[in-house]
Length: 197
Image (cartoon, rainbow, N blue to C red; front, side, top):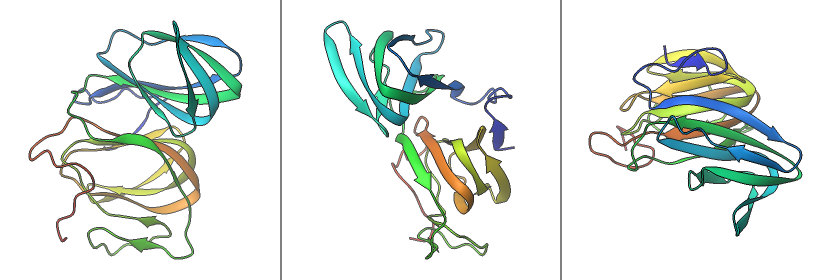
């Protein structure tokens, strides 16, 4: 089944992502990243903060993604920041990642491979040369993965294997989510792929 509850269920054994969590900070805190996995990413879901490690400082904003360039970091929220951390074992040859928002549209459309189901979003039915993970942080809707429809809500993770189509055709409550594309496979083509374009 391509949908799991990331708060209550383990990731499948074959999954490159092994753990994830939401981190809310409202005061200056030291954040230590786990060392049991080879890779960690931090996604800034909301807010602005200054991060520092030693003399190095920079400001991070909503939507930013931080690669694991540190083992621990001081974070000074302004006034608060919400982060999402994923850890696991993936290669440097991985796809893209980021934070995305999705709402109902007055002019829904599919810019990807043709489908016959209804939609209320602007999204594309596509596949990748890598496994893709959608971590639903807020909201509720319906996704299609591997030809099946699934109701999703905050706390769910949609895991679609390389080569399988997936789509987000229905939003019932505005979606805030993180996407992560794992290690490239096969032809190793980046981005959204289509069979009929």
